[in-house]
Length: 252
Image 1 (spheres, rainbow, N blue to C red):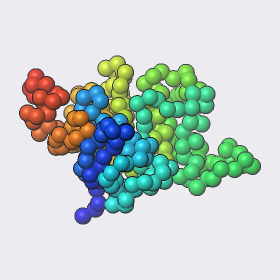
Image 2 (image 1 turned 180 degrees about the vertical axis):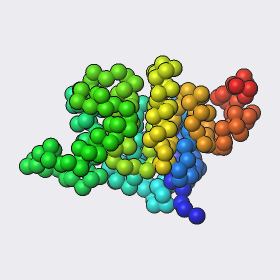
Image 3 (image 1 turned 90 degrees about the horizontal axis):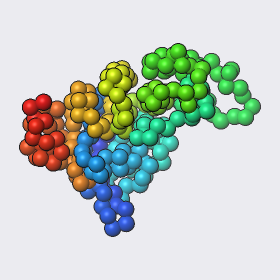
Image 4 (image 1 turned 90 degrees about the vertical axis):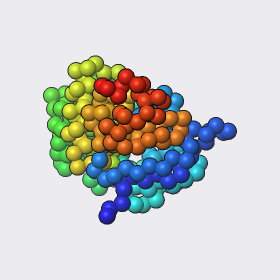
């Protein structure tokens, strides 16, 4: 049996005397789409920051595909196959869509930093960038600056950058936040495409997105995992309804 894509064991995070994440144990199965939900302030983004090493772990252990990654730097974790997006869109606004994506594929393709080599000569990087741009539906925007994209298109570009390096474990932090219903539907279709063959972990507040996409759901409340299970089990869980979903959601 293969190791989980992610395993968190007794993970805690303290900021001074405040404990934000409280001894979290969680396993994410390889190839599943796993949603982490919970009220504002529950610690969801903090948990993402711990997994991706933006914040150091105060206590506990994090494993990626069976390897202990606790204490590694973010770039080291990324090179082991984990990539993430952020709540606030994180792209190079003055670069074209193509150049944004090409930047993300250089290192995984073996191209190291050099002042004496033209990017235009790296055909494999250009080909890979175009593959990703097609996959995220921005081919017609290929040569335009990222700054002129709509909000939803910028989010799609960030997802493209997230997967461009070939990561097989992808963390998406509120990928549909601030979108209209039609934009959300397009984003969900994109997430389905890019998560095929990958492990997806997402933080999301739109419950229609969560229950439509996730194979399993974990509910984080006050820094603790309240429940983990299939969508129907989470929907019917009385403690989850009381703490977060609300009683009316059980019949939705």
